[in-house]
Image: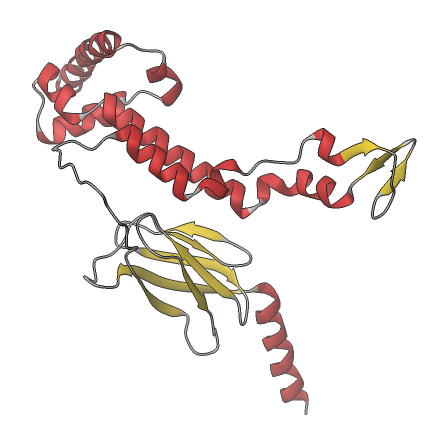
Amino acid sequence: MRSLLTLLLIYVCLCSYGQTVNGVVTDERTGRPLTGAWIATSKANVITGIQGEFSVVGAKTNDTLWVKMQGYKLCVLPLNLANNKNIRVGLEAAIIELHEVHVTAKRDRVKDSLNNRKMFAKEFNASAPKLKDIIVVSGSNAGLLPVAGVTIVPSQFIRALTYKHSREYKFKKVLIRDEQNRYIDSRFSENLVSAITNLKGDSLLDFMDKYRPGIEHIKKMSDYDIRIYIKTSQQKFMDDSLGKTK
């Protein structure tokens, strides 16, 4: 009886604290790993790695796994942690009707950004409640908490306090960071840096990693400013390389 009670307590603890679910997300048709897919449960959210891999901590028994990625249909998968903690999710490509197709050698960053914001509009538009949503002039007090001549909406007040810990806020930050990185890559590109510095291979990658400008910095620079920045940084890069060889 005592052993049975111990096992029951262990099971309850595991259910309460959650478990780790590992898996990989792939293209259902080709089997290709998908990088950057959004994975979420009721308690956590992560983004898949280079090989489509992910690890979600805190999953509960009979939880639900949400998998979302641009260009693919949303996948909602019930979890059964008692049977499977290592899963493989195959995403089905979304069918998009195209009236006209233009093939170009270079992607349009602006269009990519607009399409991304359209697909994830709910996440991009999410925001914490404003003061006017939390505190309103006393009138009808149905469902509200009256305080000193005004009324406070408890649900909005709690949401304002916890918004930065919510999944939608964290995912929005990931989307914005990814958008900013694409903007930096479009202006501080390998082709441009290589053409100006004549650096190749590992030297080029080391230079770009060391002198990659931040988003606020590069937004203030014109194309001419960026070229001057690259040339100035190259001189520093060469001086540092010479200093290491001495």
